[in-house]
Figure 1 (cartoon, rainbow, N blue to C red):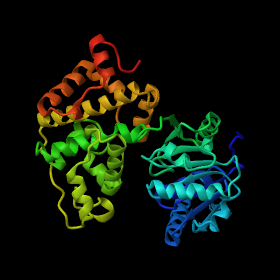
Figure 2 (figure 1 turned 135 degrees about the vertical axis):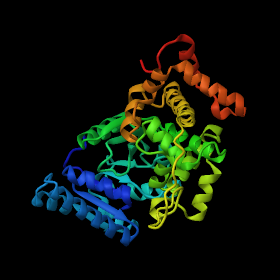
Figure 3 (figure 1 turned 45 degrees about the vertical axis):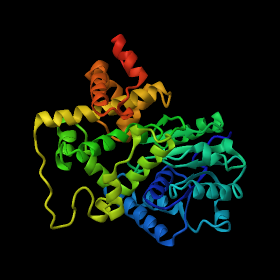
Length: 397
């Protein structure tokens, strides 16, 4: 496997927010980039985003005007993803797809790319929840297919999850990891399991908060207040879901739930489904869990420290348990799990270290109390958590 260097032409298919961001990252690192999309309007928006970003870089004196113009000149905008238009991607040695989260569409795209790319070109998917193995299985050369999951916005967020499928050649994992590190990103290696590291472990941050809301234990504003002010998270779960987009968050949750054979731990919430059905997707539609219209009045939380602490402890126990289970199931190394949650979703502490701070026994007690109350497998404790609690050891060694 040849190394991927700055002379490698990078292809990006999908000019939405994520694809445009990835293209910007590659261009700023000196690569020639071909950015393709089936919709002309998406390419136009991406070009506007790039021009605005370069103006900001110049204003902040991070780039000279000439350097900024060079970045823009390195990006070619390719209108269409047909068999004919994809021929323009033939010089690319590394192509990342960032299209709709649909397995069939991604498979069709990869087959089309294989028809025009060199045999040693790497095909990467930016999927957040689909199986890399399922995508590779449709390819003539599955060994060159790998997951490269950026976080939005790609130019800003430092974390990238590298996800080799069972057919991915080890050399491909090595060269892709090396390239992404050279781009200044923090790389973690994740197993090809639903949600990888971050989207799997983070599910209770949303799901358990939604259950607290649905049971009327606390309202939206109070849960967000508790998680921010007492838990130390930068954003509460409901304001974060509104920021991400309720359609996006619900789709990821549904995909993980289905891919995990309907494990109740990952069950989506009806509340979020109803918001999506109503078109209340969050900030981008001005309605979500909160009302963002100009004349709207934001609700005030109940700043009750006892209630707030109970909310935080419940959600945190679920998060720690997910992180411990990821270690138990070898989703990633303990160090990569800590790094992923700190750098990918900006948690205030690594969850394994946080669990040690609370105490494995205390986390286990919270989960066992919830399981006794609800009689649901949703609250089952990881076997590793039980072992550490019994031994008095530490979760993060």
